[in-house]
Image (cartoon, rainbow, N blue to C red):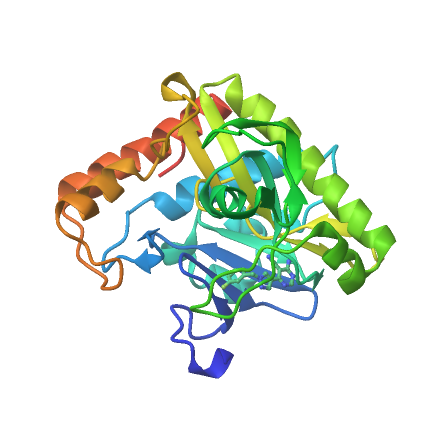
Length: 298
Ligand SMILES: N#Cc1c(N)ncnc1-c1cnn(Cc2cccc(F)c2)c1
C-alpha cells in the first residue's frame, strides 16, 4: 500500500496516511509522525487545510506526552528538528514543528477509546441496547451525560473508508491476552483521567479520546500516535456544557456550522472559505493556550 501513497517527502518512505496525519519510515528503530494541516469533518477531508493546525496539535501532543510521562512511557524521541537525522532535516522547511521522531513499536491493533461522557457512537449504541461496547450502563442516562467513571470502550481498527466497530473489553483479552489487555485498559483510563482533570480545570471538557499503544523492544507497553488532541478526542467548551443535548465542538463548530449551512453532502470534499479557516485556527490556538498556558509556535 505504501508504494501507492503519494508522499510529500519523496526521500522518505510513506508507510501510512490517515485523514490528517502521515507516517514515514526513518530507519530500523524510528519513524516520523507528521501532523498535517489537513482537516476533516463528518469523515470527509476538506480540499484546503488549516495552515498551522499541524504545528499546534504536534505541540499539544508533546505537552501531554511530557505531563503524562509519570503515568506511562511514550514513543516520543524528539520534536526538535535539530535532533533528527539528515534524511528528515532535508525537509525542515515543510515539516519543522509538525513532526515527531518516534520509536518504532509493535503496535497493538486495538483502538483504545476512553469515554468520560456518553456521546457519538457510544450514545447511539446506548439508545439501542443500553450498552456501550457491550458494557451495560445504568438506565436513564442523558445524551452527553458524564459517566460515573471513565470507561474503556475499545474498538477494532477499521480498514480505510470503514468505521471502527465497538468491541467488549473481554474481546481485547482474547486478542492480546488478559494480562496485557488489563494493563492496556488501565493505562488508557489513567492517561485519560489525568488529562481530563487537567483540561477541565482550564475550561475544556475532554469528553472522550482514542489512544494507540504498542510494545517497545523490551516489551514495555508504550503510548503511541498523537495523544489528547482535538483530532483524537472530543473537546467541548466547559462553560457551555449541559447534559441532555449535543455539545458544540470546541474546535470544529465553525467548520461544522459552515458545512451544514452550505448544504454539505457529507461525501464530497469542498474548499473552505478564509473566515472558516481563520476562526478554526483561532480555536486550535485557544485550546492550546488554555491547556498549556503558553502561545503555540506557528
Ligand atoms: N505512532 C506510531 C507507531 C509507532 N510508534 N511504531 C510503529 N507503528 C506506529 C504506527 C503505525 N500506524 N500508526 C497509525 C498511524 C499514524 C500516523 C499516520 C497514519 F496514517 C497511521 C502508528
